[in-house]
Amino acid sequence: MSNLRSISSSVNPSVEDSPPPSSIIMGGGNLTPNISTCNNLDTLHFGLYVLWPDNIKLFDILDDKRYEARGNGFKNVPLSIEGIATQFNVYPQGKKGGYAYHIENGDLHLFFSVRKPDHTPNVFIEIGSVSLWTLGATELIKRIHKFIEHFGGIVRGSTVNRVDLCADFIGFDIEYLPFDFRHWICRGNKGTFNFEHLRYTGVNYGSKKSPLLLKIYDKVCELREKKDTVKQVVFAERWGQDNYDDNAVTRVEFLIRRDKLKDFKIRTLEDLAQKLASLWSYCTQEWCRVSNHVVNRNNTEKAEIHPFWKFVQSINWQGIKDLSR
Image (cartoon, rainbow, N blue to C red; front, side, top):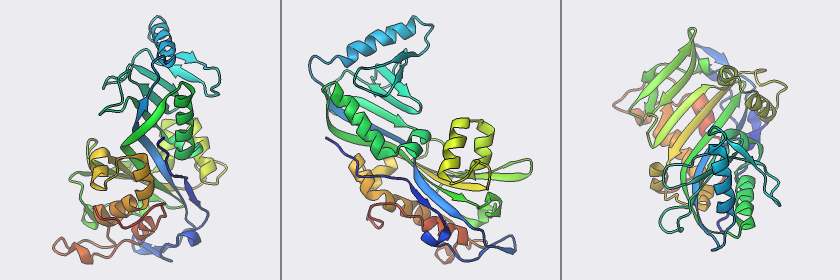
């Protein structure tokens, strides 16, 4: 069985646990906010190689439910399985890549293929932020394994396709970042500064299809605009607040796809668990840096790192920090 070493979210109640510079200099003034942090996986996509018994009942159940959904105006239909506490919805269609069946519970999506687990995973899983921030990756993967075992399946291996690493800085207003590309040292070929009503709300580096993408944004603004009350409650709790908008929150998030993960020899869930710290170190120290001043492009190594970015670099993740690629 493929087991993921514990990946738990980290919540730092004060800057003392992960000390930033004592004074953050921005816009010509000094700012010394009481910043707290929490970091976690925000998205996780992976495949499993599952050996199913010859007389598997799961596909018969999903077949019946899939046709029921198609006869119901192509609307999802509920699925309850005896012995499984989690309730699912069954989609009328599957997913590209030969996955005929699709079931979901919230932002946890499972896709099943009837093929043998040879060179391509026959079970694919996509986990979103609410599930990851409430239950955690380790617990979710345990539950997925139990579901598979319930129908006699045996997990023979795993492969990671995408992981999003993020850190939230509670009490830090994104407007204090230098919104000037001359301060940024980034390997992403494309970048944008986002604003709304003359207020900066985010920075993106990399394209939507890039193997590595950086997003820094006003998390409170995003939650407000999307009007997702579930996420508002979840993050208010994770941030230790009564309401999600009690304080400014700046999120730093790296989307890392399979091609970039391979550079770190990350193929399995076990590999990922061991190398989270190394990924974050690479993303914040090699792939992207923010300078306190306009960068001399002829000598970027001597650029003075912005105090906030030093804070970003100091976020703790499990695993080995310094790995050769």
